[in-house]
Every structure is written in structure tokens, then in C-alpha cells.
Length: 602
Picture 1 (cartoon, rainbow, N blue to C red):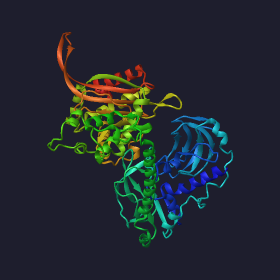
Picture 2 (spheres, helix red, strand yellow):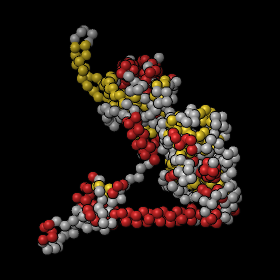
Picture 3 (tube, helix red, strand yellow):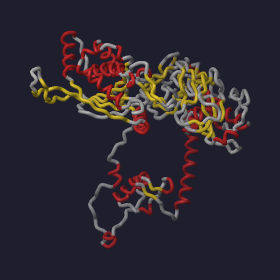
Picture 4 (cartoon, one colour):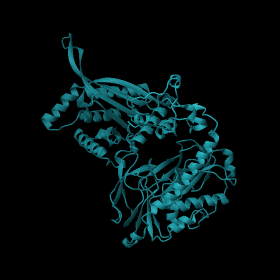
């Protein structure tokens, strides 16, 4: 019982300090926030954290109320999909949560067993980060979780344990009433972000709704609006800060401008120096431990990259120190030795016999290694890479290709321009043709539900279009594309593409979609296979149009050669949703839209 009580006390103390904007009237919440960059586990603790106890409580995971929308700070437990004792797999829906926008599903990030529900079905106004359940890895461990949790335990953030350091209390003892701004969750999948630009500077007045800064998320660069008024007293995460965890403090606000001068200028550096000391001590102890275990012994394994570098630079293996698991010599170990110069080259037999000769100056290994440049990866590209791997590993891709005749489309486009002064691109017409094909073949406009193990048809036809930007590929959505005119689709595509390149897309403009189109015909690319964007079940790869000569039978029955323009379309489909017949029907319907362009006007 004491273990659960202390666990929830710790969660309640940190909860209000780490999510959104927190009003602090005492020194305690700020000292608990710790304005330095903490360990990853320290912040993951409030949403889903692995905990260990030496007093009998088994290894467990605390599930906190997640932030399922950018503006969500509390939610209601609408329904529990799992009950106590149930097995939970990765991706299983644990419960349904009613947010400020809609009722959404909360999926588990780890597997285990639901040991205890802390927030029962129907719980109202549960704060983001507040514990709602406990899971364990072993079914037998459920018996070790107390059946009753004392009421009121979570609502006592004032209770401070001895773990709160006296040094932190002294450091912030003279602070006036203040507010801590934490890194917000601006998208459902966001767990960290980058500070792209500060719109306000220290000392500026902030009103409700003012944009404080621009934050680069896993989707786009979004604006962070303040929910309270005050003055920006201290920026804790400067412009350009990378991988700032959700909830991590990024700034401090005060109500009275006279209180700005009472915030120490080095408030972020004091705790940072303490953490650096701790980190240095831990690093030195690790080095000493490695030295004790490695002295008089050699590494047992060598990575392929390290082996190549050793051969290239002619290094002596016995003088290199391994830092990899189970004594593995890694590429970084060799590079570190080369850059530091603390290595000896392996001497060849001929060098040992012959006397030393003066050799002309040559480029050293260090100079060779410094000829490359590391380009930082944007948050968007990191997420794209992760999603692409997940898609290829978890989605069975089915590929089908078809050539369509482009001449009717080109003639129709020319007619619109000359007779109606309407300029539309080939891509605009492709979007309309695909949308109508999806409407006529509803089996292709669906997605796979892992929980139910079946394909779920979509109510609307929402087309995601791939737009290349400097930060990565974005997919803004043309919603209800089958119901819109070509002129409406054309203007909307231009507007969304411009927003995507400027990084100004709102979440509702790129989240969702039932089908994707990727067009590389303008580069030009003849044909390619695209990767499905889950949870969607299909994406169409569009190549360029090529003039080809084909035999055509005329009205007189004589076969003659004729030059036509053809374009190759390649469908990547989720084979769980698309079988061969569904995919074939979709491509046939799509080809009919291109050959008889008037169908799109019906």
C-alpha cells in the first residue's frame, strides 16, 4: 500500500509541472520541474513509465492520461476496452477517452497485463499525465498489486518526500509567483519537438492567444499560443533547441513585470551544472569500470565498419578500447582513437627492417575524416523514416500497374483553358479521377482495423497528396474530393501545397485521409512504386506521359500505326484490404475515367 501511495504522490507532484502551463505560487513546483534537460525516463513516466521497486512491488508500467489533441489538458474515461487481468498487446486499444475535440482511442505502446484501473469508466476531468492504470509484464505479478488504492492520495501535491533536494529548494527560494511553460503536445503522435523560432523575447507582454514561439513537430511547424496573460520572464529552451520532450519546461512567465528582475539570469544553468556534475561522475565511474574489466584483455568482437577503418588507417588492434556490448569494438571507438591521435599504426615487416626515411607530408587520417559534413535531420524526416519502416514491415504491399491513354485528358485540359479560361494541372484531373474511382469501388476506399481484424469502409473520399518540402514529405488532404469541381480542387491544391512548403499546415489539414497520390511525372519519372501511408490502405504512384506508337484499327478495319500519349499508374495496396479483384476493379474504373473524360462531369 505504501508503495502505491508513494508512486501516486510522485506522479501528482510532477503532473502539474510538466504539461502545458502551470501556475506556481510557491517554490516547490518549479524545483520539482527541474529546468534542465532531464533523463528521457523522467518525462515518459507521466504517460507510460516503467517502475521498479525494491520493497516487493513488481516491475510495472504506469499509464497516464495522454494528450490526444493539441489543446487537451484533461479528459474523460468514456469506456474501458480492457478489464483488469486482460492481456495487452502493442497497439491494442485500452480505453476510449473523451477529449475537448472528440472521443478517441488510447492505444498501448507496450505489451503486458492490465493489473489495476485507477480511473474507472465515467471518470471526469482527468488531468493529462494523471495515472489512469497500472500494467505488469507477468500475469502472476498482478497479485502483488494492492487491490485498494487510498483515496485522496493523488490530490496531495504539497506533500514533499525527502527525495526533494534541499539545494534545489534554496536555489529557487526567492522566486515570485510564476508560471512554467512546458513543451506542448501539438499533435497526437508528438513526444518531442524543436524550438524553431521565439516570437516573444524576454520581458515582452503576453496576452491570451498570443503566439509565443514556433515549434517543429513530427508533422509540421506549428504555432504555440499562450493560454494565460503575463510577461515572459525567462526562456529556458533557446531558439534552435532540438528534441525537447513534451512537458519539458521551455520558459517561465510572471504576472507582474517588476518580478522579471527577480528571476535569476542563470536559473537554467544552476540546475544544469548540477546535472552535468552528476553525469560526469556517472561517466567517470563507467569509464573506471570499463578500464578495470578491459585491462589485460582484448575485445571479443569487431563490427564490420570498425574492421574497415582499422585496415584503412593501419591501426594496432590491441591498443584500441571497445565500448560496445559484450566487448564489441565499434566504428565510434576507432574514429575516437583516430581523432584523438592516441593510437599506434601497425608497422609492416619491411618498415621494421629498413631504417627510417624522410617521407613527404601526406594527408593524415584525421584530415580525411574531417572532409565530410553532418547534416542535421529535421523532426519531420525522423518520423517519416520511422513510419516508412513500420509500413514496409507491417503492411503486406500488393503492387499493380496499368498504362492509361493521356490524350483525352490533355485535350480536355486544353479545352478548359481556351473556352472557359480555367487552368488546371494534370495532377488536379488525376485527383478527381481517383476520387470518382474510389467512390464507384467502395471496397478500395477502406482501411484495416487491427483490433477487429477486418477492413473498415470509409465514409468519405479524402485524398492525401504528396508535397515535397525542404523539411520532408508532407501529405495535405483534399477532403470530399469526389464532390468537388476541378476548379475547387485546383485552388485547394495550390493553397495547401504553399502552406506545406512554408510549414504552416494546421493539424486538420494533414491528419487523416483515406487514399494517397504521389506524382513524380514532372521530374520526370516514368514509373515507380510508392509506400503506403498507414492507416490508409492504398497509394497511387503517377509517372510521366510518354509518346508511343501503337497499332490502331480504323473505321475501315485496317490496322495503322498511331502515336498516342500514355501514362503509367502503379497502385500500392494493403493486401488485407485489397484482394486482386478489388484492385483490378479500381484500376479499370480509373482507366475508364481517363479514356472517357466526360465521366468526371457527371
